Image (cartoon, rainbow, N blue to C red; front, side):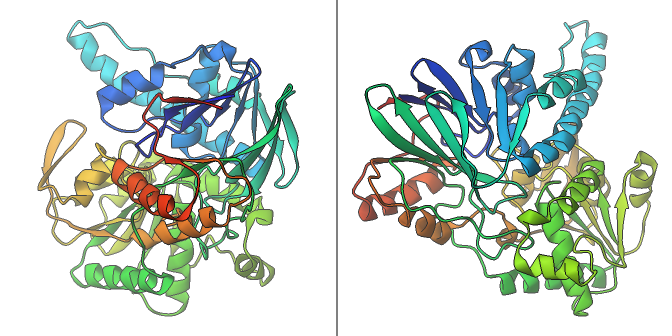
Length: 464
């Protein structure tokens, strides 16, 4: 058996790991690499293996950095099954067409410039047609039900509590003449008490563990801190007559922010501001959420039983059309605008930032992890000048960061989850974390676990 760490190794994006057993190949995730444009352009178009040689994909969840390069894989010849939970399958049905539309629209803009410069035109990473072919390969599976991936490998999904449908994957591997072994791939582990979703399932046995480490060196604030910080940001910005612009991932984060605003509004803790969710994808994804109450925690189920909508309240309005989106930029009253993408790399959020970032009355509220090289990270670093669509803008808006809303377990949550895995654990691999975060977690685990703990390098292959 071999494991090759081909994405999200010493970084937090582009999750992709290749498992080879008895001559067959299984890909764990196939995510888009998000970072500097030129590097992302090259990495997302080139696979370090022949896509036709892959027998199956096991997908941990629908976030684009885990699922977003599946259509490129299919475009290059992959024809196997893509195994995912039912909710992940449905979310990908909304997210992947949106991703294709963004790629095609952005490339149209780039190619117009290249045509004027008499340069060769680029082809899109993938098209909506590639996405439709990809969606036919999905195979939905419920949590807790074992399913065959190849003749030698059986998998079971357990609730990861990260986003709707997210899964920790338990793989039972039986190589001829070698007995059985268990490989657990966490995907992204959620935090306990996350709004809407159930807490992550705890597993107690594994031979090999591949774990995320996004916040391996950080401890986040409590839910009470998050509520207080959100309340203070909204009150402070409204008092100076500004807008609060929230870049938020369409899946998970948008719904959590809406849920939190709903609670604060009901409690009378925030000003009576209009709230706009300006993302057709987020609107579609919210409808998918409503279709999967089996993923909800007890509090949200009670909410629904009482006839309340956790994704809507009196002052909330969902925006679909381009014309409605543009009209938000003409507003001159305090309001909240939630828009994708979460790392400020593509989508309508860029237009909202252009229209707000130079006004000191406004606030850009960051509620999720920002990868190195993204516009979101430059905003978090409070750079005085930021570049959007090739133009420079002087940042005068306040930038606030609320880390407690992240859907990832923090250092304590990861240590608790990994600490619960005992049995015959032979090796731990830490992925999906910047080097400082992964190494911080690895250092602590080496003092607590008897097995080796490795932070694999990009492209590293390990044989067992």
